[in-house]
Length: 186
Image 1: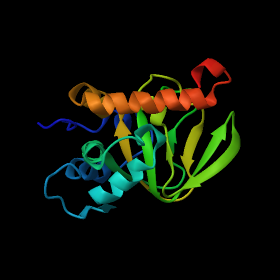
Image 2: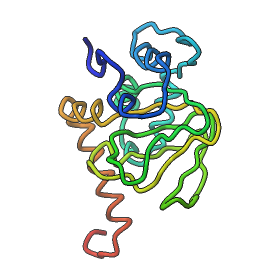
Image 3: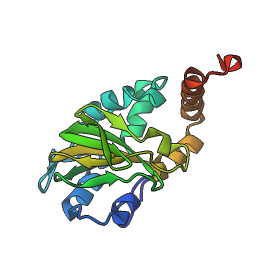
Image 4: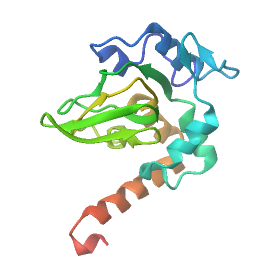
């Protein structure tokens, strides 16, 4: 078994109460195969270069090379859900980072709609490096196609590729400094 593959559905998927189809699980496994089809069942898979481009837009990965981004893209899971599916719930522990490719989501806090996001948007990147509760609920407003990078797949990569870890830590430090009012962090 290769890194990132599991014998059952991804843990975050199994934890969801709503129904991802078995096809979505099969798509996630096929996306890691060397020669993978463009579709598995009804799930259209994303090309690796599309994933690399999308990951490059995440502030957390801004310093990573194309080769490093490709390594991350290899351990992602391609998913497809119907409108109304809850991707993450406010207050629950986050364990994955989402990259929206097609469709639209609604973000709400304390039951109130905050904003909508669509294809090309990202959320949940802090869940990759820290076990913290979600600050919002994200629900699919339309049928949605996206890919997921789980903390379970990401954290071992930091051990295996220390340069990725250093670059991610620099991005986190830069982000904290920009958000802080403390002049000593600038």
